[in-house]
Length: 310
Image 1: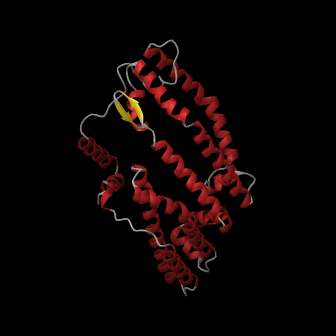
Image 2: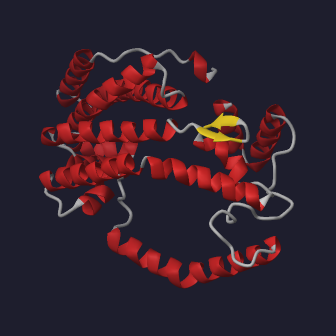
Image 3: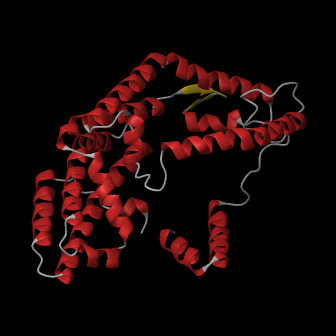
C-alpha cells in the first residue's frame, strides 16, 4: 500500500476511552489465560489504530506545516495524545497485576512486563497539562524550522534544500550557504531561546511532579532505558573522550590535508573530497531495486521485511 493511500480518521477521545475501558475490564475479569489473551490482542489492536492515526498526522504535518487540515489535526493531537497515553497506562496497570501474569510472561516475554512497570513510573493524570504544553512547544519549534525561506542561488529555499550548497565543492559557496543558514537562526534567536527555555522548565516541572530529582533521571525512564542508566552512559562518554576523540581528530586532520585548507572550519566538515561527496548513481527506482537485491542476499528475514515495507 502506498503511504498516501492510508486513510486518516479523526480520533474521538470518548469513543476510544470507552473501548479501552471495556476491554481492560474484560481483561481483568477473564476466567482463564486464553480469554485474557483474546482481550490483550483487542487492546493491542486498538492501541495500534490510535498510534497509526497519530503517526499519520505527525508525518503529513511535517511534510507540509502550512497544510491547514493537518495543522489543525496536529494541534488536536498535541492536546489529546497525553490523554490517550493514559489509556495505555491503565492497560499496563491491569497487565502487571494480572492473575495470569506467570502464563502471560511465558507467552509474551518478561521484557513486556519490565516495560509496562517502567512506563507506569512516567505518567500520572497530574502531568497531563505539562505533556500537552511540551507537545505545543515541540510543534512550535517544528513550524519555526519549517518556516525558513532563504534566498540563495536565485531561489527561495528551506533548510533541507540548503544542504547541497553547504556540501559544495566550491568553498566560497559553502561559506556563503553557511552564512545564510546561520543568519536564519540568528534572526529567530529570541524565539528559539524562548522555546528551549520553556521546554526545559516544563520538563523539569513534570519530572519533579512525578517524584524525580530532575528531568535527566525521568528522561531515562521515559525513553525506556531499561538496560543502562546515567552512570553507565557517563562511563561511555569517558570512553568516547579517551578512545574515539583522538581518532576523530586524526581523521579531521587527514580531511584538512585532502581538502588543502590551512585550517578546517565548520563549513568544511561536510565535504570529504575536493572532487565532491559520493552521489547516488541511477534513478530512485534503480536504487530501490538494488537495495532489494542487497537485502535479499543478506538474509531471508531482511528480504521479507524490505519487501513488506516496499
